[in-house]
Length: 97
Image (cartoon, rainbow, N blue to C red):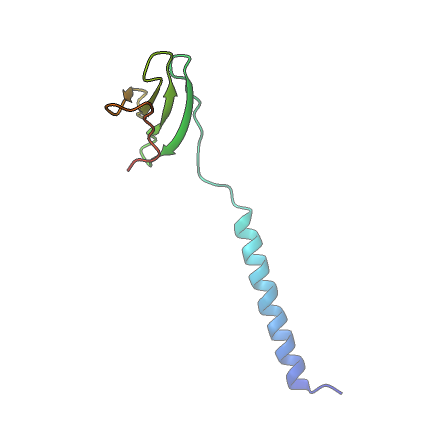
């Protein structure tokens, strides 16, 4: 025969477990507060590696000329700047602040 106090402890433990499991599952179902914007850079093949909280984007763009791979920053207003490190075959930006 089980002791009434141990049953109570088991029920409390089960209740805590269920509340925690429900709380975790509800949090997992919330939608992320983000938006996506598609843009094209002069028919270039691009790879995006970072976005900041101002919606500026950085990455790498492939050109036909040498150096063929240049780093780029696309600002939230639509302006784009390309960069090449001196004496390098590739320049790539992977993050920004």
